[in-house]
Image (cartoon, rainbow, N blue to C red; front, side, top):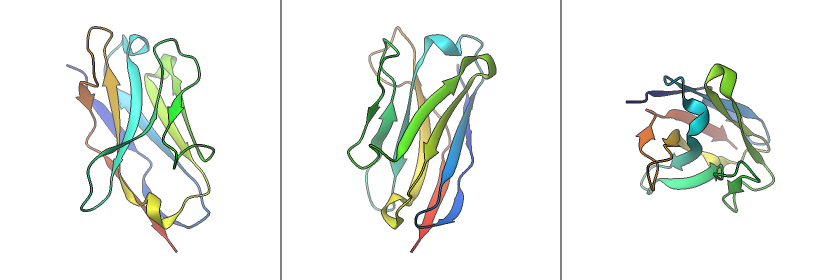
Length: 119
């Protein structure tokens, strides 16, 4: 069982930046693929950013492309989402997720961290 704990959310003005962090409990975190998702009120959870298994170029949603950057620090068992040029429509709960090599989808999810962008 892997536990993921997000942090770094908060209230920010439009145009501002935030860095979300996700701490993983497993020592084998480097073998997992990680991603970030968000869920706005009344909407379904949607993909924001995610790694590829080859650790090549990450994938981003059209909305996140050019503004958000996913990264990780395996030595610290951490994954990050750097968010810049934030817009009010980015307001949502953000979740990190991890997929083990044996799975076909993300298996482990954090509890989420709220991001609110004011206009």
